[in-house]
Amino acid sequence: MSQSQDTVQNENHSRSDSTAPPDGHQQEEAHQVPSASTAQAEMAQAFRDLARGEQQAAAIEANLASLESKLDALLASIEATNPAEVNGNTDDNPQKDRVSEEKQKK
Image (tube, rainbow, N blue to C red; front, top):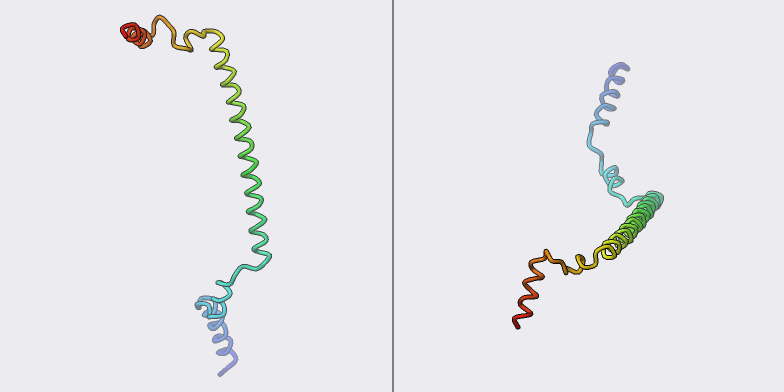
């Protein structure tokens, strides 16, 4: 074979290698357990995600506590302003009137 034919065959062989399916050894490497450094990196990322989640949970909890105290203050101010209405003892409460009438009948 001439030198030019060898060159063409080598180029064709190189091209076929790049599109050929991987051999058994290459497939084994793809299915191996991740290395220790990869596992450590994944674990470190998981801990960072966990820490971020805990910070978000703490912030949400603080916001909820703030809302709860504001609601308590609002309810207390409403009760202080009109305690009769809060307890349901109003003249315009027909259900309360009906209950009172039923108690009087007994």
